Length: 607
Image (cartoon, rainbow, N blue to C red; front, side):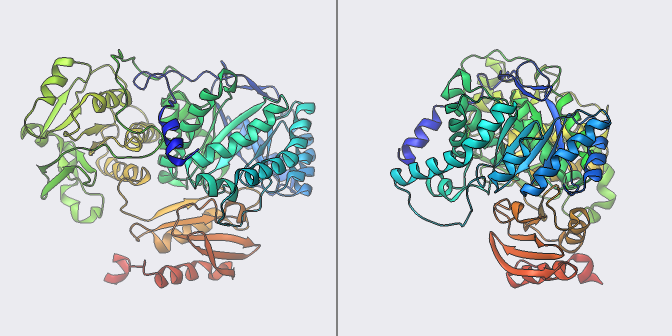
């Protein structure tokens, strides 16, 4: 089928029955040991340990710490057959202290390691991009016959694992990662959500031919836009394949990073999909000690346990935005009186940051020290100047009046209506004349209850989901009342959503037993040297598995090549090899300078 034909087929698909009133996607039950996934089971929380797989005592100890804080399934890397064999000792060590938490073996590159691991764990995760392929970044055209031969080769390598899992009642996760797609997939489908989905379906068809159905799927990426699009397309394709393709879904943003940025990026990707009813198990991947992932994951899941929001009476409304790729909603342009100068809104203008007057008054005395975190518009002034119109998008009369306005107007959803914000703003975008830009709100009933993490999740899920749909020309964040924190949070959400890049973007893997250096310490050193750079994307990867492929669209990469040695990348191309770890950060800075992306930090220039 031609690319145009592919696009036409994709255009007919949908990942949810109702875009304005979602419910949880129905899926079949998959058992992992004694733990159920999908069907009527709750969304499960899992994590991955960082200890060396050959250190049995450390692996047992870290697993027990995870279980204590609420982790329901634990993944352990098995890069070699020797590592996979030691999973037996880890399983027995846990059993000896009464811990029956299901274990997942994480496999890359070596089918033989997967066969060994399947004897000792309850689930095996494979990455179809590298399970039976050695990625060489070759560019070639595959004829249909050559492509079929490649699939037959994969069938021969994958079938023994499927049969062993079938015999031992072991589940499989078919976990595609953006950036580690095989050359075969890259050449036919590109480095795209479509390629990610096709990669997984190729392996799923082999398993189904063997009548194996204990499968869970994942489509992980460090870019939330790519991740969201890939999962949506996966669900749509599974639905199109037939009712018995209703396998559970594992959600995760890979290499999300650490701190506030890592939590925001995870909330955007995972929370957006949960709000659409997609997801049966999640992992929040942070470059921190693994037990820190669990409170964030549990808080995300808890937000959706009581339902997904008030229903909207659907009157035939359809999305006016693309479902499986990012495209910003087209709108007319207008200007509004800003705090310092006129602010252009709509069209291709930068998404602006509006604040309540109280926030601007609280930070006015220290505006010079806020750097890039500047308030740009005051909500009350927009209303007073008649630049902003608030409406109930369910009201035909109000929408008709808004659409009949002769001039372009910034439009938002009125406070106090009983709709979930995502559904409300989607409905607004579907019914509003495209010439009017939209002001997004993270909440329609502002209040200050809860902790900062709750406010972060609320804002990131709502704004992130809508911005990744292409909806929104300005944002008004009110879930967090602390003025400085609310401003920082607003800008960091815009950055993580990829719609306003104003600082360095880091892609940092969450560490595991394959890691060849201390990721947390190294990431901190790299940030200390480079955090002042604007619009530069730096990937910090602990090993070659999370190396050139997983870095996807990073500008520069810092990758563990051997114990104590680091390889540096420009894009996906390794350019410096076996640099002693003690010199590597300085050499990374030199590399950034060589490529004209360096600027001196304000602090350094003033000293």
